[in-house]
Image (cartoon, rainbow, N blue to C red; front, side, top):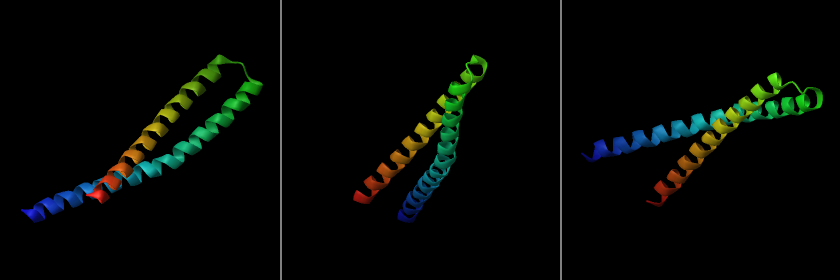
Length: 88
């Protein structure tokens, strides 16, 4: 019975590590996309007033920022859980 419980705890820990690893892998491309969208927005502000171009860019930036925040929140949650597990 205790080996089943230990296996369950190990499975949960590995799943958490996998989720943390995935979130960390997502963070880098999201940051790169966010940076490139900011550069594009700055260039468009200097060279274009066409709303047909600027509005989709604004929407894309908002979605990338929302995803990046979700990834950061997931990483923070996983890290806080890890710290809580270390105290137990």
